[in-house]
Image 1: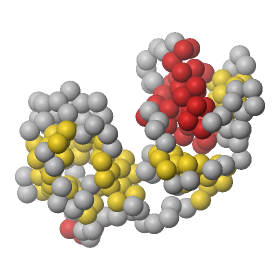
Image 2: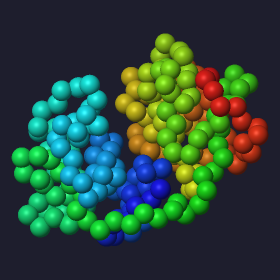
Image 3: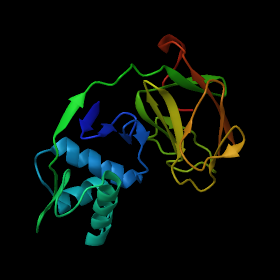
Amino acid sequence: MRVRFGEFVLDREAREVTREGRRLALSPKALRLLEVLVSARPRACSRAELDGRLWPGVAMGYSSLASLVAELREALGDERRECRFLRTVHGYGYAFCGKAEDEPSLAAPVACSLSWKGRSIGLSPGENVIGRGEECAVRVALPRVSRRHARILVDGQGARIEDLGSKNGTLVRRRPLTGPLDLVDGDVIEIGGALLAFRSGCGSDSTLTGSA
């Protein structure tokens, strides 16, 4: 689902914010904060609620949330005293105060999969995390693979891969990822010694969802 506010579009499936078609450079936590506030609109969210959504199970100081709010305001060109989108509720928390409209995605997600050791693993629309953790959509249980190593975002435009701060890094086309990268059919993804082949445009009946 996409949400349009002002000249911006928040695409929750692609996990990005664009301004007149150009993607904004936002940290993952700042993007998540925007998603939470937009989803809760017009209700104000307390600092405790936001801390729990952004850093579950971790005690964070006030400055951490305030820094994310400042990052969002700078990216959106918002002002604290004359806010268009983010309102400070003094002594409580924050609220999304701008006019926002939900709109459908422009296109159906592209059918994509990863192949490893003769298996084909279907990728779902939205976020697909690759890693050693049991909760990952694509589980690669190897020692050099981080618990949440990388992710692939699938939408109507295709698929995009991003490293999640893994210890040993992610390589695509034999080059380390330094930022999000659009994948093309046949790309080889190297994660902790595992080589996974990316496929796009395949029918859902040719893929198998499961662990690698």
